[in-house]
Amino acid sequence: MSALIIAIDGPAGSGKSTVARALAERLGWSFLDTGAMYRAITVEALRRQLNVRDDAALAALSASSVVRTLPRVTINGRDVEDEIRTEPVNEAVSIVAANPLVRASMVARQREFADAQPIGTVVEGRDITTVVFPSATIKVYLSASLEERVRRRGGDEEPASLARRDDADSTRAASPLRVAHDAIEIDTTSRDVNDVVEEIVECLHQKTSS
Ligand code: CDP
Image (tube, rainbow, N blue to C red; front, side, top):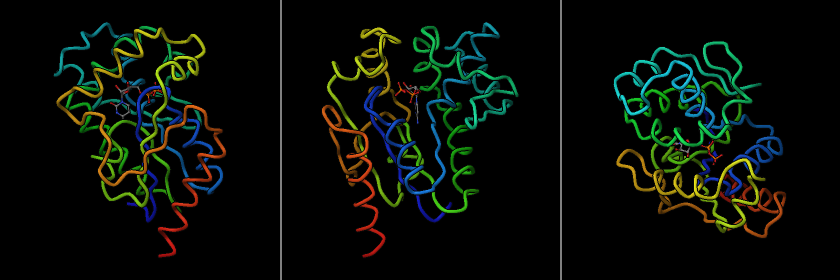
């Protein structure tokens, strides 16, 4: 594992990607969007017309697929950056992500990625603080009101779809979304991105200087 990890979890639209990206830039660290990995597997499953509830088929697909998230999201070399945020993917991704075998395969790659980074990594998702990096340097749980989270999606996702994903992600058996006992909780509803980034940087400085 790379020396330093900032792990960020939270529900859809809580600001995870925006904050994590800005934080990585601010610190000169690497950034990993784990949701994009589950979304890429979902795009490919739909393209192959697999039943997304077929655990064995999805496990085989994820084990045999090469997923990259930077500079663009690709699966087996195919660019899916634009497809990962479409409605069919929003509807199916939480089913795919509830599959423990898919998760095991993605978690191993997330750890390998962080391990290969020169300084540190900002990683965001649903189970990063609780399962993937339980010993992260800093753990953050971001939240925001449902109204604000829907607004941030700018009409790209129906409120009902967002609420369904929230529910599926927090009630599933495998690595549900929850607040780690030692996470810093930040409500981003009326907060500026830079402000949130600076709060996390301050926590990091306090932690690494003590
Ligand atoms: O951007 P948004 O917060 O809407 O979602 P995302 O981070 O792109 O994640 C999409 C979906 O992937 C989530 O609704 C979860 O079902 C799943 N996911 C997960 O299970 N574990 C993660 N570490 C990241 C995402």
